[in-house]
Figure 1: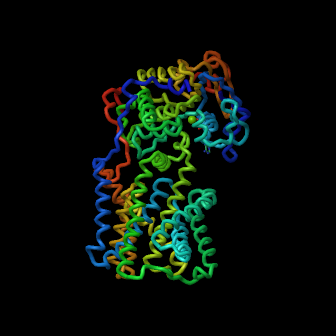
Figure 2: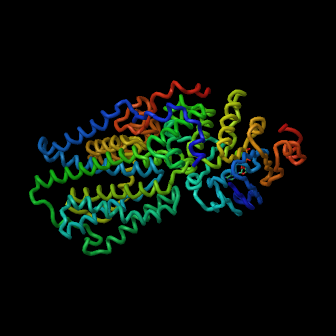
Figure 3: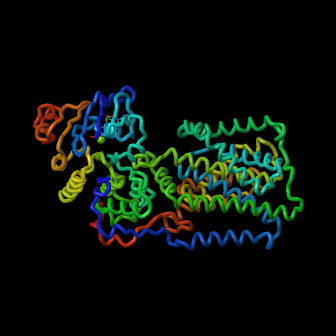
Length: 351
Length: 238
Ligand SMILES: Nc1ncnc2c1ncn2[C@@H]1O[C@H](COP(=O)(O)OP(=O)(O)OP(=O)(O)O)[C@@H](O)[C@H]1O
Ligand SMILES: [Mg+2]
């Protein structure tokens, strides 16, 4: 303890450091984001139900992308098995619904329950590294699917519809939309809050250099586990939204499909991995591509593929990552800035 | 403070460390010299928990830490620098050090920030606090390695070639920084090719060659010894 205080002789002025959260937008960014969310919340009163139905898709895409970004962008976990938790979220919602819980509260309960399932599974997944981890998560997803289809009450190998839903279709659409919006808001703002916390700094250190993070005392495994569980909860909520939106699941093969992982990777890479904003942008890009080109058959895939290739070749940091680098812009400022001590310092290192 | 016993490290069939035993009492500053590839960095990795150990034990303050994670060893008082700097490139210099103060030293809030700033001041990096670590040039990165290690409040500090490439004046500053740490009671193990800087700080010098300790004693003794002269083929060190 005596060593602690004596290690470096403190300059008087260093005892009261002044730290702010960087980015030019500072408080304006999050405030703006909340404003946008509030405006979006009013949409059911303002626009055709058709539009809000489409936005439900956008909302769960943003949610999924944000969760994959947390995993891969911050904790270096390239998972191709998040469909395990999307599917579990949807199926757990059936159970909650069967036990008389409405689908909206059900979604919250379901993500908590799936988080509890993900915790022990993380011990399994974390035994594997790198590529093996990726494949391992996929295997876990397949095993979860195989277990789920064994329950006939859940529809077995076929799909299943939700039993109890809001009767009035107009009201149901509005509720579904608010649910999807709420889940998205929680995912994006939750990511932001996590990143601003002490854990968030750990995660960014882990993202940049795992070995170095370890040698400055960051409990890397713990950080990863927390993220793994949070991402599972987020994906489960998205799965529940997908289930509510579709009034059930078409088939276990669909909701446990690896295509969700491909989608998440695409959105995050396009938008910018390792940023809060990137996945939102990526999801928006995919949403628009899907809306305007999905009818074009093979060309749709060509366009999506070309977009992915173009971005990874020319903008390896993704759309937002590139913008953010060039302009210092941040809607969700995470970085800390030190004020007032620059003048007291010795000259900076030369090149 | 530190006891290394019969330590062996192999990478595949390559035996990099072979039966190394070394005890460092609290407060002592030990310099490690030896030719390239002698296994010096491997020794630091084994002590800090970054690298694996094939055989032998590492004890910190009497506690066997051979199978303890690097993160926990850091929290128990081992701070280190990396020979090839490993900055958190997308974090600012300040944040690089802050995470070390928060996790390594277990500080929070303002205390952590103050500790981080003191470490930056001690290493002359304060004016670069808001620079992205990835944009800092090599010498600055080496300072950052030291700053990060300091921010963890180490009781045992492992330094791996931090003086290379410095001007005379910078080397003097570095020496006085490390000396003040020593005076504060920090135990130090310092790998350095710049022997001139090293001998101003250390009480004891260990020469490692081909994975074994070939000389161990006071700096004068070791530098004058026949073993060391042989290892360096007659005088690269003097
Ligand atoms: N992870 C590894 N895998 C395989 N071989 C390694 C590994 N790390 C080190 N080595 C080898 O072990 C030997 C000793 O390496 P080490 O880095 O400990 O040497 P050193 O004494 O620090 O040398 P230098 O003065 O050049 O830094 C070298 O031959 C190196 O190539
Ligand atoms: Mg070395």
